[in-house]
Amino acid sequence: YAPKTAAARPARRPRAVDETRFDIDVLVVDDIDIARRLLQVQLQKLGCRVTTAESGADAIERLQASHFRVVFSDVEMKDMDGLALCQQIKQRRKGAPTVVLVSARSTPSDRVRATIAGADGFLGKPIDAAELVTVLRTCSNRRRRAR
Image (cartoon, rainbow, N blue to C red; front, side):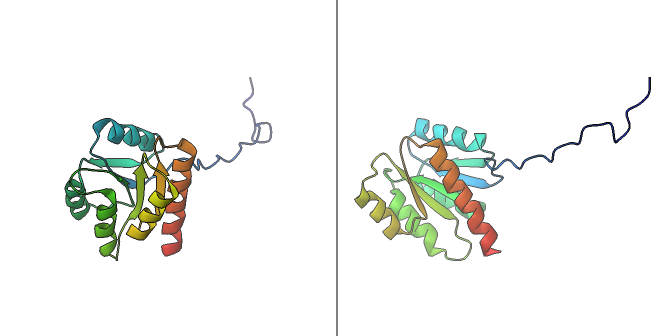
């Protein structure tokens, strides 16, 4: 038995970078538990570290305590809707995370209202996995350009 020499071994292919894995901190805000958990699971499968909040006020507290790259917020919530939450987040100016509003209503006027509130993105429910990856990829590219 003779050990294989380097020349006899097949060349190893370089490992492909998994472009659907995102090593980022994300905050998910929704007052509906099942909706919050569903998005949390989708994001975790994509490699995100997810923290959740069940209201706008809860989200503001979490944002003051930790840094998040992206905030996904439902638009229609009881105490503070996602539009008002987005406006408060964007008032912070420096270091404000990317804000993506999520809604079961996704008419053109809903999207315009999200843009006026300062949202960086908008996703309709149910959330399409490919659209979610596109949003996360955009957020990752935005951070690279900002450096």
